Length: 303
Ligand SMILES: [Zn+2]
Image (cartoon, rainbow, N blue to C red; front, top):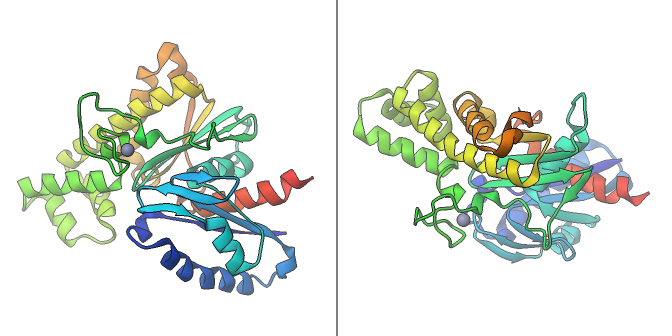
């Protein structure tokens, strides 16, 4: 038994056409299948974790603002190219499923929320062992909840003042660049200019090296996340919230403030009782999530 997983990541494909992204993906998937040495007949199916809104029935990625994609028939295209059964769901929902199915914990959570922040912010919910989709599979779009009551920055979704405009990778990098301009010879500016890795890694590195302004900026961003988490706690009352994406690499600089705000701002002590963790799957949670989708759809629920 094997499932194949594809997770569409905004970070590497921004502004690429869906056709071009998939054309580059298919040979890689075929190659991975060939190298696995497993017979094709043993593959139960392919899971695709897609950014944004998904029409589950038709397997269409309806809207992915962070990729600039609309109405992409992912299921049909992937099924045609790989000649295997394909299921498509939202990528963060798939991550929630991965934590629910394969996360190692003493006690199973009745209500699990997975929150992922990178280019955008999204959430996925597993309630009583089942993915929660909402009416038209729109549950979990917390990145587009309005946090600024009066105005705020424009969001790619067309609204203004969304959570994503306050905490996400591009926002943190922009804030850091603005800070660096104020002190061009400072630690942050030097690290952004001469450091290694992606810009976001350099921002965390400056915090690690003791840059106070960077640490304060990250705490401010994390505070907004904490407010969103408190709102989520009030709506869903989860036993467990699992954080992924930026929170994996920026754990030390983002999580304490986000957690503190969540615990104090949630209603009636609900925030005190929720368990908060970082994903056990690190940066692979997306592909493990997509594989979980395929297993859940074509194997476990088939019986
Ligand atoms: Zn938005």
